[in-house]
Length: 202
Image (cartoon, rainbow, N blue to C red; front, side, top):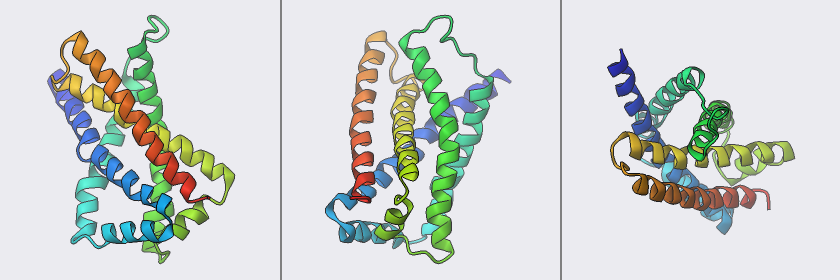
């Protein structure tokens, strides 16, 4: 049983980086085109929508991996032992934040998919105006800010965990360097995501 849990945990971390994490990077990069105006964003979004076998690719490479990652992540969040109260060092706090952002992202991603992909399936064009309308409510802007930062943190910190679980970061020195790298990734992707967000409301 322990070996099965270990294998599932490794698969969970792998899917969080590939393909889910890579999709996050691509998604934020496409959204970032909004800083160049509606035309640039619409062109980038149209390019993504024109990919062959798009629905199949979305199901196999995005929705199913996210579903497994989310379900098993919720299981981990409610069964793992938290040590912040006893030890309180940096990595334990990262552990707690990883779980809390993951739980929030279950709600945020479901809402985001409903407002975009489901709305598109029901006939609403997926373009700059769609996002501008969604973000016309200040509360929704705040919701998306928290969602974007949660997603970026969950990915960047999860990337560190992935490298540890898969034996890439073994020594204390390499893990410390990995922490700095993950912090840089968080800042860069956070900037891209938030810049795109405010491009839709400017």
